[in-house]
Image (cartoon, rainbow, N blue to C red):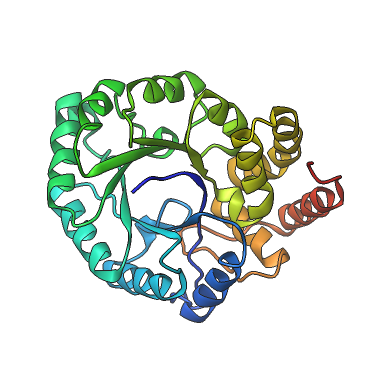
Length: 298
């Protein structure tokens, strides 16, 4: 499995009483499948994965597989704090129809999470997973960073096919690309550095803002792939203000507010997260309108 292009890490919709809203889930996925996205990631950080129970996760993956055609990728987040739990989650995701699993770094016992510990963890998960494994580093949330030395030792595992790096550190992205082998994809999650990461050699992006503006994100990727760097940079500049507002400033509640504005079912986040305040919702609305009114990238 090769990971390239743009995938959207989609939010999980909840009803007002905090239940998973499967009707909204299906409707949103159908709409995303009408865009040029390469695929979807369910139950990633944007999907509020730590706030979703295992039985809910299994239903969400199964429902998504029923809406995502076989020629599009469906990745499921299965990161857990223990190796045993991560293996069990990967197996359940495969049974539910995921093409691959995105495995966030364990982080709770961070002082003991050495290079050796990460290598043991990921090798064991990859050995046991019925589907390919994508390593997932998100230091801003976990407080740990997957060492490049660990990645260099894991890239040759036959069931580890790539890594998602969600931070904006282009030096780290470059180091990851430097140790990647043929068939190992480095994809990024930072929309403000998406163009620069592609120029360094990243193979694509798993971008939260692609949930709201999938066409623009895909066009940046296509421009770079075709060597149209001026067009890619121009469109990147248009995307950055909205991306920063929806992710860096307001996070998942902000993205859900944007989806509501755009006609998707965003809804409320699951507590302890809370919806954005009315003034923030107004700011998000105005930024969406400004983006829509801006001249489209060539």
